[in-house]
Length: 157
Image (cartoon, rainbow, N blue to C red; front, side, top):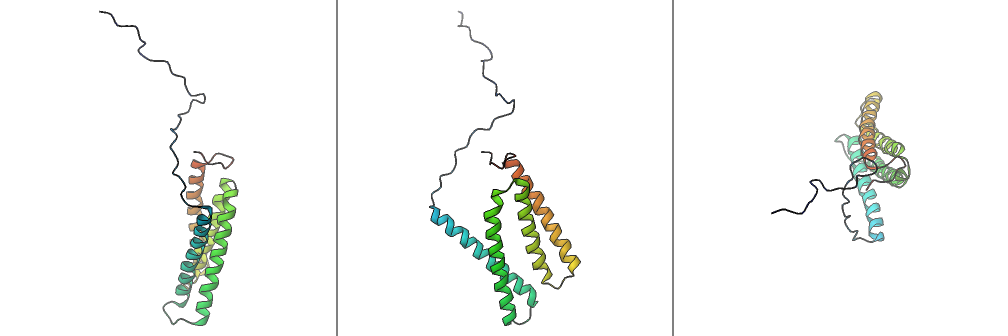
């Protein structure tokens, strides 16, 4: 009994680029409205700002009594952090991946440096830690953006 002839290896078209292609994963549906996303962005900025301002004020008073100047420092720090975070959050995604990572790294380094300086650490020590935090942030985010974006800054899906 003979079987119909069939090739041992069926013919398939090879990818044109020679690279492996990823299977397209379906995206999760966005169930929230634009208004909800906008409110979440502001809530995040205000929440992070308040936590940062409280932390700055706590470092500044070093366990001492809460004073009016201490409260003012906390609220001004909270406002500045929230405003800068909102600006970086809005501006950074429009930049190339190198500048995008650099902007977030500068923000993180400055925020940490100021926070650390409120512990009465020396200027050199605060600057050293700020530069370390900025360098680690830059390396991490650059790697993340480099592996998830093309050279023009478009996300790879």
